[in-house]
Image (cartoon, rainbow, N blue to C red; front, side, top):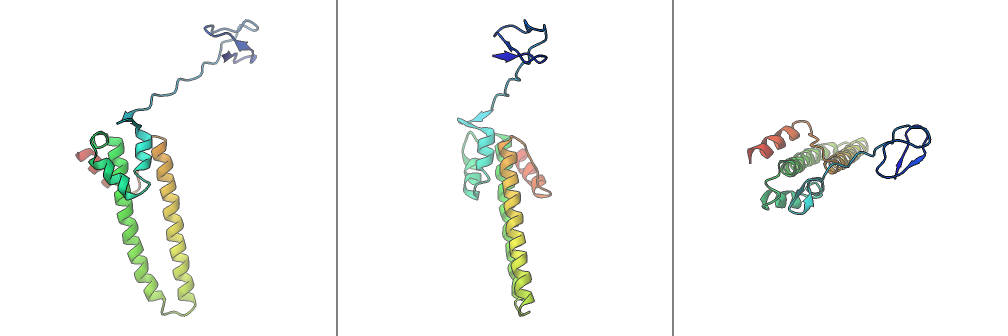
Length: 154
């Protein structure tokens, strides 16, 4: 059922003008068709690539998914994001070991750095999940460029 954009009256199906005020009906935009790869929508597969590193690797190896550039991009971006996360984690472990020699302040600063890294990583991860589910190829700085090169290389 459609509704008049002028008066809001209900308009019968198949008609485009309102009988009450001769205004035009508001046509609901048709939803875009969801592309699929192997029975799963591309945006869902792209989002699942961010859950852990295992689905990302599976999507890069399995046949219908590894042919889709959108899914490959998100899988590679997740792998590079995890690699950067591990490098930051190791670096922060070294900084925390050095800060441990400062009795109270060092422990407090190390704790705050760990919390900032964890919260920042969580926020970035949620943004990546939401953008992939929305069908967007959201690129992280530097990591996104690497992922795009890898996705285009296959």
